[in-house]
Image 1 (tube, rainbow, N blue to C red):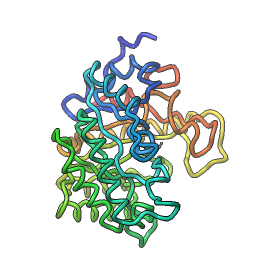
Image 2: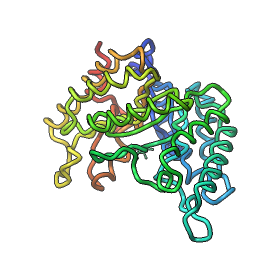
Image 3: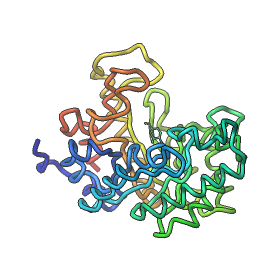
Image 4: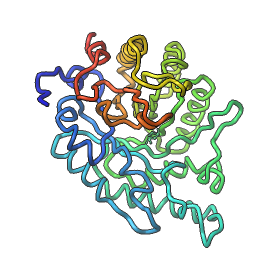
Length: 329
Ligand code: GLA
């Protein structure tokens, strides 16, 4: 389908921030026209995660990651690197030695080796998500229990940033990235973590995933959290934005979103982008977690087969009313 008549989202926001999309080896083909017309930054949806890059110890597979790097190069797109240290999509061997839990020293050595190899291989990203989702969602907790955390200790995050600082050579900013970032208690903990890291490690950015639930996350809280993050003195990226049409907490509703649901989603998008524009001094990039509604993780989560239609282009790759709203400013 010819999309050349569409106004370009990234052009419209040229004076504000980069507009990114998560892509994969399929969507760079099926959604190429939208990607190159509408976006100027990409993130690998999966192919730069630990399990994709180093499925077995010392066995690296850069094939899919390289394909995206090549694509970004051909299309003149910037690229975010995602993600070096995370508790998901990391193979089990990483945490084990002869069937028993790895020691702190061994896990740190593996972390360093992985970060070094990946940073030396992929030299194009302008930003790297060094650590993903280390903060606890539960009130009262601080850092989440995970193998990285429990086997190394609280300083696993600092270590990851120190390794990334040592091996990332092209000046890319190093990010901490997390979700539920507008929940007040979690926001406080993320701010605490960033402040602590700034004392000892080369953190340059904070990634706010932006997987919002418009039914449970009041815009006032989103605003308050942005105010707090803007004071941290690091660059902000919105890294995984999507706004589902359905309430994530209500898994009984199925079928097509109603007109009312679509209206709520559109207003939410409009308010979000107005907020992001207000914070243009600190926000460098806003990345959507996908290109169009026919390829999104929210078709299988939280319930399979429910089309949440969370993006700005529909399943036929046509612009949605939400897009029109955020282009009007
Ligand atoms: C997290 C990760 C992303 C992606 C999403 C959902 O937010 O950071 O890479 O896996 O979950 O798919």
